Image (tube, rainbow over all chains, first blue to last red; front, top):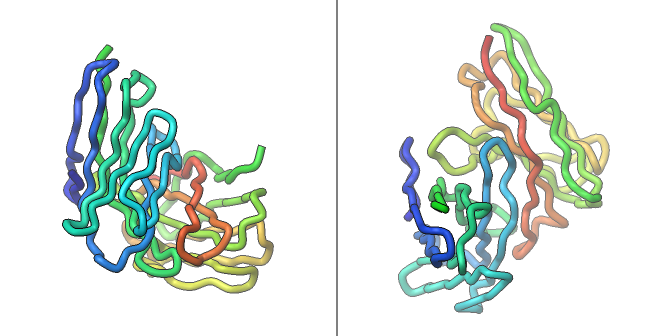
Length: 111
Length: 114
């Protein structure tokens, strides 16, 4: 899940397992969502996006699911690798690219 | 390669001093943004610019100033009026400000107080 507290939610998985990272967004009118990956000391890196007229979108090893009924977004990473260790956060587009960002979830992949 | 370059990577500010963070993009993007990232929090918007010679305040603009004299450049000045400047500053750009325009980020500048 997402948190605005000092301590990020964490997810620890074994290498090769699938990971699911969740995000609850705030505005039912949001029409566009992005997942970003941020490694320590670096800027956020775009992973995948989805528009509100879709429920699911797949990329390479990643899938984003959107449930507008409960305002929930998830990122699934297949066959998680050590290089996937990072903070993942979602962003929602409120209007005209006014993006709101979650605090993120820290993913740790154990070899 | 096209991208967004922020400099310096680390910056230290003395009491009463203004400091300027650089952001340059060669993506030919119209829109540029400055965010502040604090531990455990989501990005907060400081300023954004939709086009050259135009910029708007974001949620936390107090103590900051920007300029947009060239399409590729959007420098941020952290003034002495910003009493809590220690943070990780991120610059982003997007093709436009309509919906469905992903923002792409630089690698940030970490600002600390001496």
